[in-house]
Image 1 (cartoon, rainbow, N blue to C red):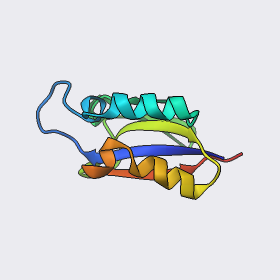
Image 2 (cartoon, helix red, strand yellow):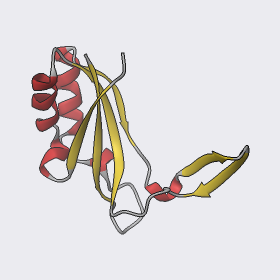
Image 3 (cartoon, rainbow, N blue to C red):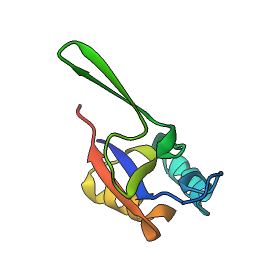
Image 4 (cartoon, one colour):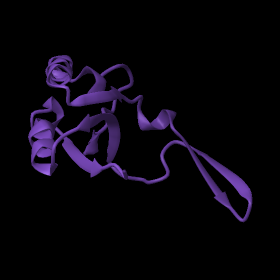
Length: 111
């Protein structure tokens, strides 16, 4: 079964490259998960201030710069994994370096 791991945490207050993409250990985690055949893809994301949110209401396209929700925690990255079951997905998510600093949400993919 495929799962999306959403790496969620508070964004750094300073601009620059600091963030989930530069979290120590991510490269090693990705290499190990690829070696195991679990990791299908993933990436770190630029800060939420670079986002564009699109909604359509009554046939009108509404565009908002930045995230739609006002919250401290933002999605800083993602990983697409394939595991035998939720137990394996939890093991994979808990081994991600972000789990010790932020949170990793596991979402099953519709299949």
